[in-house]
Each structure stands twice: as structure tokens, then as C-alpha cells.
Image (cartoon, rainbow, N blue to C red; front, side, top):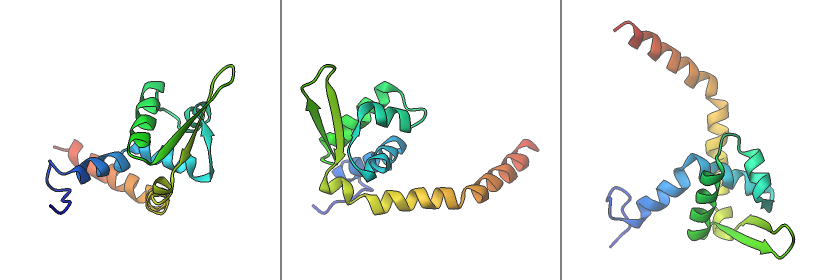
Length: 121
């Protein structure tokens, strides 16, 4: 059977869910310039809870996009790095980041127009 993300039973939909999740995108972008410690990721990604960061990293690791390396030290140090597969996502997610920042003013203006129109109903 050919992958079909429009079919709810297809695994490709789960892959899209993973890579389209805002936290996954931000983790991948944060790891773009190299290995990071858990605390570095938590500080860089404003608003992510410890629980959500842990879940996101586990999902990315499970999907083969991130590797987790535990160093035997006190306190233990854990490093995260994009795999080759994870690095292959960088052009896509970097493009999304660029689009979002480039078009932010237009999106905000559209939202304001919409909200003004809807508040009149």
C-alpha cells in the first residue's frame, strides 16, 4: 500500500503530526547548529513546559530524528543531536520559520480585519 496521509490509518499521517507540531519544529530548529543539552533547549524555547519538552524529545528520538546521549557525570548530562534524518528536515522547517517571520505583519493585519468583522455580528 502506498503511503497516504489522507488515510487516518496511514503511518505517514503520524509522521506529519510529529514534524508539523510546533514544539517539534522549534526543537529541530534549535538543534540545527549542533548538539544541545536539555537545559539549553528549555531556555531557548520560551513557553515549553518540562513535560512537553520531554515528550517532544522522546517522540523525535522514537522517530529517528534526534539522538539522546547520557553522560555518566554528576549531575548526569544529557545531550540531544539531530540525526541525518532529522537534519534532512532543516530546509523544510527553516522555510516555515522564514515564512512565518516574513509574513507576520500580514497575518496579524488579516487577523485584525477578521476580528473587527466578526465583532460586528
